Image (cartoon, rainbow, N blue to C red; front, side, top):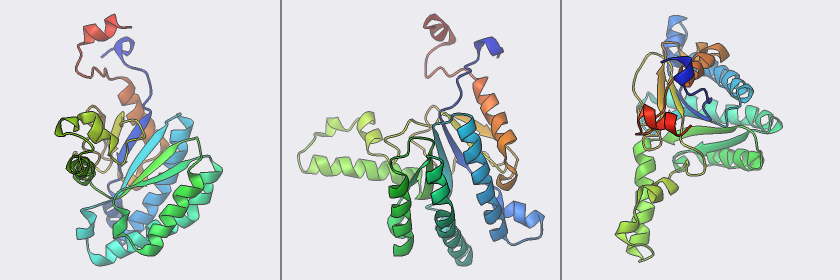
Length: 247
């Protein structure tokens, strides 16, 4: 596609599966947890770059509902790292006018971690800069299911009719209902699947896969993904001719 016909509008919402921490550590003969620690540094780098690129929303898949199946020691260390990162980073996020949101079923976490999450969200709730969504104990199917269950309860009580269960109604019940759907999805680490992340929301998202392991993913790598996005024509079901005629 020529640059003249490309959509040069940068993505407003970027969603990332941060894959490759364990393999990064293994290559260095380190325990997997060291890769997760290195991955936290990459989060800081990408948050900074998103601010520089005027991205409005950054969604990061930190811990899926399926990750509980990992070895118990690794899960425990991940929970400890999550708590530590919240404690160490939330004041800096607040200082930089960043709003932090945790999406997922946080009821599965310890009481102390749930309290930390609430405090972090409350501290940054009025901030007007970049929104950082951390998906923790999140699954796309869970998100859709819990939204439909809310609607089913309303049907049960007579508040709405079955025909009121529309795409718009389901979208309104998702954990991401107050933010735009992702424009660009990035997965690091070489795998090419969405792994139950934002399934409903990514119906028209542009995908970008890279072999770069997450701890090595930096601002330059993010720029490559954004550049690829900007060269694509997003038709949303329309033809190229229709898009040109509407300009």
